[in-house]
Image (cartoon, rainbow, N blue to C red; front, side):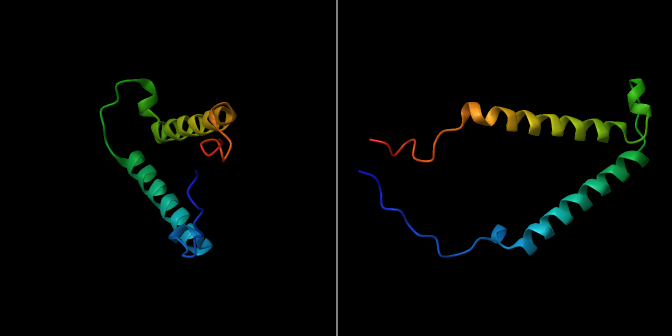
Length: 88
C-alpha cells in the first residue's frame, strides 16, 4: 500500500523567480571575482598553460560544461519513471 500523496502548500525559496535571479547574479559575480583574482595572482608556473592569464579558469569552465553535457546525455540511461517504486 502506498502512502497518501501530500499536497504542498508552502512555497520554497527557489519558487520565486526573483530569488533565482539573485542566485544567478551572485554566482556570476563570484565567478567573475575568482577569474580576476586568478589573472592577477602570482604563482609559480609549472607548465606552459599556467603562464596564460585566465587559462586555468577557462579550462575549469570547459571541464564543468563537459560534465554537465555528459550528465544530460546519460540521464535517459539511468532515469526511472516517476512511479517506479510505487508499482505493485
